[in-house]
Image 1: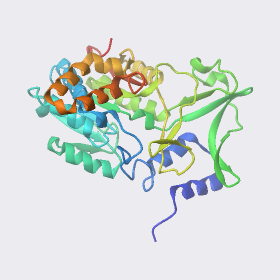
Image 2: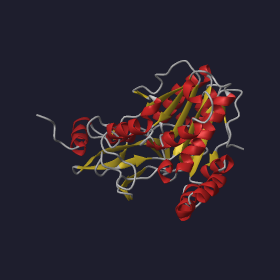
Image 3: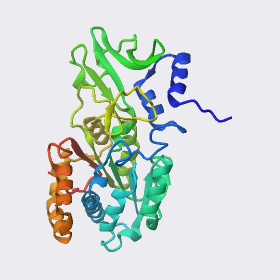
Image 4: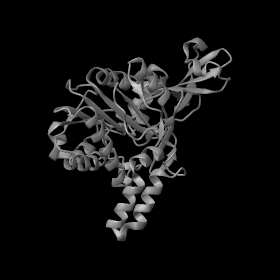
Length: 358
């Protein structure tokens, strides 16, 4: 008989048998459990989902990313074979818009091998519908790649990777865990202290009560892809909400039906995410010998790529959609919307000058 227990029941059983688990373990189960994980079941995007990403707001976003990709390919001396990898492609909207622009460059499509890293069956179906003409390959390992030059695009991917949390106390740091209290899931602290010396220098002077978050999964992705980029030439572009330097602060959040929710309630039905520590990603990349561009806001990055001019041209060609185009532009670049909360990170091999950065 099939197991009909909810993911919450399965997690509670594991907690009762094995004791508390790290927040990273809890997030991994809640988001990617093979049967009931948030990202392995339903389509989480759009009005019927829990969040809307930039590519779903306007075609302008993907089009400018397409311009960015083509420019990088040209700087790589237009290799006759290269891999374009998107991490977490959603519905395929970003890449569809990007390749519509990129296709105008002679030789680009003939040289491109499109690779998609995705675990959600419903989203894979939509990606196939939008991107089937480009013969994409769905990878199950993030670095299962050819030896060609590599361009990686990751929009709102790193924020969904599991994090660990540590809380500063008088006797050192204690890892925050998920356990059972009176039969209900709750947060607690490991009794084992961790000395300041084991923490990054940026947080060693933290005061009691402060929280430090680290994503070992994000560092692993950067490590594995960064090695390939260094050896094969190329770049990784990541767009996400986050902060420029490693610091203390709690950013773990849960969203369900477009509203904030309890992170421990209804695992598998709730989106869990945390702000990206771009300082940590930068350290991994530079330690591998890659160059990292100054972190840009989404507003500045898209502005340098010409989003205002693109919006003007779209409005002129579609006079009946002027207000909708203006609203989309505002949502993407205004500081009260996504403009400054979202950052743009780029790590690349030597000799490249990616556009969109100061």
